[in-house]
Amino acid sequence: MEELKIPENVRYILARLKSAGFEAYVAGGAVRDSLSGKTPDDWDVCTSAHPREVAELFSEDRVIPTGIKHGTVTVVTGRRKTEEQGEEERQRENGKKENHEKEAAEKSAVEVTTFRRESGYSDRRHPDRVTFVSEIEEDLARRDFTVNAMAYSPDRGLCDPFGGCKDLENNLLRCVGEAGRRFSEDPLRILRALRFRAVCGFRLEKETEGAVRGLYENLKEVSWERITAELEKLMCGKYAAAVLDEYRDVFACLIPELSAMFGFEQYSPYHNRDVWHHTLAAVEDIPPVFALRMTMLLHDIAKPVVFVLDDNGRGRFVGHPQRGAEMAETILRRMRFPNHLIQRIVLLVRFHDVKLKPRRPEVRRMLALFGEKGFEDLLAVKHADAAGKYEKYLGEAEEKNEALRKCAKDILRDGDCLSVAELAVNGDDLIRAGVPAGPRIGSILKDLLEDVMDDTLKNEKPALLGAVKARMR
Image (cartoon, rainbow, N blue to C red; front, side):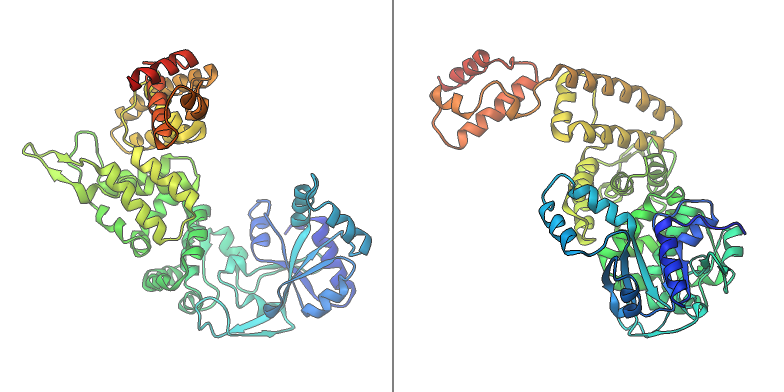
């Protein structure tokens, strides 16, 4: 095999460890990605040196005891810990260079972990006992999948005791050792397996596949924070929609509300798919941004709840966007999503079916509600929703979106008023015009904004104050 292109700072760490008589390898995802022709995001080093020995060896660099209990320290190269530099860093703490230096430090930071063996996982995540070992093969034996259980040393080449390289060539994901044991140690590995399938297109080896299907209920024991972090990568994968369908029971374990969509016929002249497969088509169409993918996964979550079959045999889903937004918020809060994501997704679900025409008053309202970036997200959502219907509706949606986009561009170019802060009057102006101080001020300003956005009132001070005085008569 060709020599891996290892960054200079990582080579420095490997060489320093080797010169001190220790074994040292790069391992895990960096090796897997390099063999796949990808550029790794980060590099991890494993070594026969114990943490104290690593800290002593790199005493002239910065060493952080990030996971000392499990044998891991982080080495930040190229930074001598001198008193002068420490004082200089303190002086620059709030300066312009802070962010740049932080980014540089992150790029030069490398986790260095001692070869180890693990046993007992009573919390279904962390090993109860960690034993340092001297052989790289023992360290690789504790890892999740064969494609992650490879190590590389510039002088010794590839160490691949479990056939990870061959599995990588065959696009196969296989657990190291017994699949059931690997997934029982940490059930999140089940979702990680599906993430590799969604992102890289790996096929699951037979035993690994069986363990996924047999043990996925154990995901209920994993914290939502860990599940959400893994789900974000999965949902942005190229094959996310296919994996959602193939392993629908796994995802319904995490989000039980999804199960009502499976096979739910819509009886609609607009739809040629059931609710679930319409949803998958929408997920596949939307750009691979987590908030947008989750919006499409949940945008029709309420359809089975509000469904009514009318006298003509047609399905009706009155109020499903509003009800869906309520359900989406409940789901996302249960899953401990951050508030900013919840707000963004819920708003898009609530307005995903809004009927918009390329007229300034309507588009102004959406721009005021969503902002420029959010409005573009809304158009992407409407495109994806149409992509899950009959083909002709996608063409119509694209035409409408182009007209809406042009209208929004004109509004932003012309600086149309979109907020109370942009009105030509403020609260002080209203008080001087005779409006008593109090909550009524804010109410009047909001009414003025509505009139301005509706083109029934010009955003000019005399006109606005005239309207205020007329209301007070």
